Length: 211
Image (cartoon, rainbow, N blue to C red; front, side, top):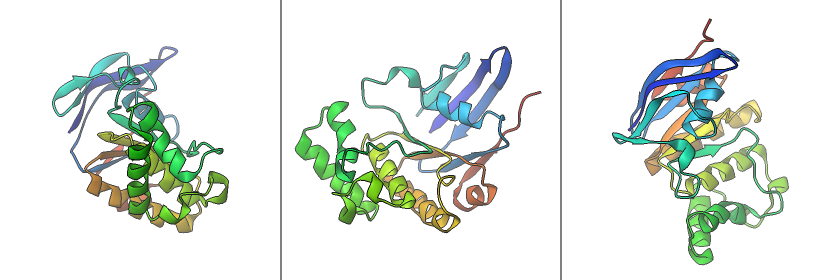
């Protein structure tokens, strides 16, 4: 379980997050919804360790952790970015296998085998030798999810996972996010799409700008 206790974050003397408390159970999906400027992305970036908080505590399975200080070991939190951030010069399977070799120090053989398992799970094994430029938006999104899961995180964060997709692909990506629940990872989703959030979430956090 992920717990946030009294998380506070400000920018330029403007409070974005104010003593936020939150619990997210294992194997569940939390969607964070709200208007622009409400702190959705700031909260995700703090959970992912991309921003420092001003005060408060993060706990995973009851134990405090600092998401900003796990960069050189197996990360607790993985991120699927809005624009996918795939390496254009690497094939699909190379994209998925790279970080486990560099960070987790897996052998190339083991990393490739695990990448192939993940690509099979996400119905992408036939695309393993293609490059990102040859993929559809939905395929890129699935590769990005597989790449994040290859690092064996406990928490997987998504930054607007459907915003770059055609409406016809939203349900497809939503189904794969639901399928990812079977891996045991906690999933946290930032979205402007309340209908999408209602469809896939176990829990929804609605945020508003602090006045």
